Image (cartoon, rainbow, N blue to C red):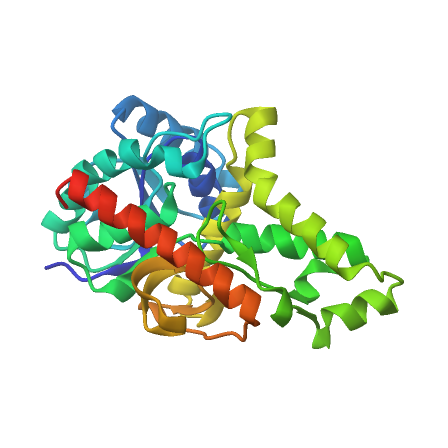
Length: 320
């Protein structure tokens, strides 16, 4: 077994999301080697060439098209492969198509005894991360999904815009499914330690519930709106992938709402969804039980129940 090369990434899937994420990772300088893999070998080669031609403006990194044999020592294996979400199609509509794709991809990864972190980005990410855990046999902490990292960034951005404050000073989380049943954990939102309602009033905003509803709907519908306007979303998720990889490679132990297996938190068991988690070199180190009010706990339970039911149905149908 080859040792893990923490500075090597494998990108499986070179569509809009995979190539944009590879471009963001190239610019970040956190990897020194990146292998691009796609069912369309020409596509992988073209993307690797195109990104490599910008290297004189960046930092050294070897980027090339390869096969599953090239992923053995990768520190992070990023899976973006799968069918794209089309206009008027929910993330859950993609399930059957992409579970079949994963039935061909994940066993290839597992067969090579990889010891890196498996980062699932394909949608619906919670179902596919659960599928990847079951198909790979990897320890659960080493299989994580991009989850609601992007949704949370959208929430912080919109709160920042609403309040006229740097969105990096906003502490907030979208949790649950990365999809229509996700929820904003409003009861724990603060701006640099000041409760959201207090900060809003300091800035002259008093219609709290109305503003929260508007912002939440905007976050939840962001992907649909972008897809309607430009057929796909890829820059935002590319930045989210870069951020998750930074946490892993630098062992930052930062807290991100990645998608991971739940065991007992708020009564959730054997379901993959997003909760704030400590992310470092070993993947998910711990899940953080942020405080939720009664309504939020109910919505989270509903989200978990829906995902569990889909997992059961899919895994019976596909024989996983």
